Length: 422
Image (tube, rainbow, N blue to C red):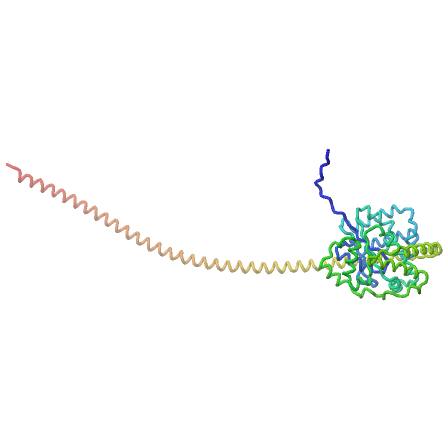
């Protein structure tokens, strides 16, 4: 017995694009490049603000959820030991909430784009969620010099360079470890801003497939979006100035930069930096992590409120714009209807005038026909009288003929008697 082939065509597998890496390292720029090249943004995108005027391109509800999940584990996004924190005992419930959030934000979109740096240090939570959705995973990791990231965090959050470099090191190690067995691409952020096309081409080669919709139109939109204005803090600098953290970060940066060039560097700098972070956690984790977690609780509540307010404001603005568009459409429709009505009225008026002219012509023709009919009736009457006269004359002639015939017969009889013998 052989299996009957199914009549239902196989559905193409959905592909999720994940932007992993450190905050302030170009994740937003890379996410929008992917979105313009065909990846699907979430339903509720975190709005732009003074720290990122061109937008974050990440689901703010998932970002707030991730902050809550980190706090539940006694850590926070800016904790250099966040990726090393043990999960809470109710992690299964967090995973189910994560799955519900993902479905709410992306529904059945074919190429969901998930960008939130916190996913990098919560990979053990998110990877099972994404795989349970039947998604093929593709990872993109932007690389930015840790001191440039530190400069940005100093302006926004007041962090010291040493803390920012440690956090950068932790995130980049987590991003590399999370994506090690997946199709992935490392992208130099500064090079992306200078000339994105060779960087994207190199990323496609690393992923082993092209981006889904990198058309000429998409390319023009990426040109308009990317600029060196996005580079607010100069790249480079001497990492040795931040001590042991700088030394570890320098090794990680070298490995990542080589990987972005398509090389296969030795993992020694990564292993050394990972071991150093574990040692630092053992020494300072109980001092650093609770402080970061406490600050994160307040930040999360504020971010949630700001996200909701911004989303509502955006919704109101979109509703207002939609109302204006509808009003303009209705006004245009009314004007077009009025113009059409005027054209129809003019056409009907012209048609009515032409009909009146035709009626006048017909009336004149009818009057003419009436005159002709009268003349013909008079002629018929005359002919009728003539016919009567002719009939009467014919009867008179017939009478005269009969009289003549009788006279002839009488004369013939007399003549016959005169000539008879005897």
